[in-house]
Image: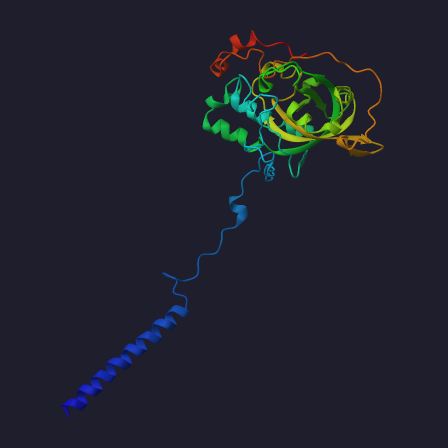
Amino acid sequence: MGRRRRSFGALGLLRAAALGTVLALLAGCGGDTSSNGPSAAPQDATATAQAAPPFATQAPAPSSSGDAGLMGEETYQGCPPGGDGGDTQLNLHKSRIDAPGAYETRTVGDMLALPVPNGVVMLARESWLPGDAATVARDEGRAVEVEGYVLKVRHEGSETPNCHDPSARDYHVWLGASPTDSRATAVIVELAPRVVARNSGWGSETAILRLTGKHVRIGGWTMLDQEHPEQLRQTRGTLWEIHPVTRIDVEQNGQFVDLASGNVALGSGPVNRVTGNDGQGYSNPRRPSSRYHHPRRWRRHTKSGA
C-alpha cells in the first residue's frame, strides 16, 4: 500500500507540472501586456512634425569620380584643392569637381531666402560655432537647378582657390529672376576652372561671356561664401551661391538645351572682356585665416564688387 501511495503521489506531481506548462502557454498566447505583449501603437506622425527647412528634400549623394576627396577634389595644374591661402575649408567647396546625379529644382527666390547665421559672416570656417555650422550645413552642398536670366558674366582675376594661377580663373555670373533685375538682387553662380576644364562643350571664353542676357537653367552645388557681406544689396542679393556650376542649359526656341551639346547658338556680337576682381578668395595669399576676425583690416584688401 505504501508503494502504491508513493506512485500516486509522483503521478500527481507530473500531472501538476504538465498543467502548469499548458497554462503558461495559454497565458503567453493571451497577450500578457505586462511584459511580452504587443507594443504600443505608433504615435501620430503629424503630432511631432517640424517645420521643413528651405531645402527639405534629401540632397543627392556626390557621385564617385575616382578622386581622393569626398567631393571629388583634385590637384589642378599644380594647385591643391585647398588653394594657397584664405579659408581652406571654403576653398575645398569651391574646388569640388563631382557632377550630381540629379538636381533639386529651385528658384532665385528660394536661394535668396536661405538663412545666413550672423555668427559665420567674416569668420574662417574653422572658427564657426557648432550651431551656426549646422545651420549652414543643412542647405550647403545640395545639387540644385535654378532658372533665371544672366545679367552679367565676367572673367575674374586670380584667386586663392586656384593658387593665383592667371590661366585658371573663375567666371562670375549674376543670375536674376527677370532680365531687368538689378545685380543687387541677383544670385551669384560661378564657373570654376576645374569644372570648366571638364566641360569642353561649354566652349571658349568668348562663348561663355556671350551667355550675358540669356535665359538659362543653371545646375550646380549650393555654397555659402561668408567672405563678402559688403557686396550685399549692391552686387549680390545673398551670400549663398551656386558654386561650382556643373550644368548650363540655355533656352533655344522655347526649350532648354544643354550648352555642352554644341547645339546652342550664342550669337556673334561683341563681348565684355574686362577682367573683374570681387575680392573672391582674397588677393593676398599670405594672409592667414585668423585675420578673418578683423573686418577693418580685411576690407583694406578688398576691392569693390561693382
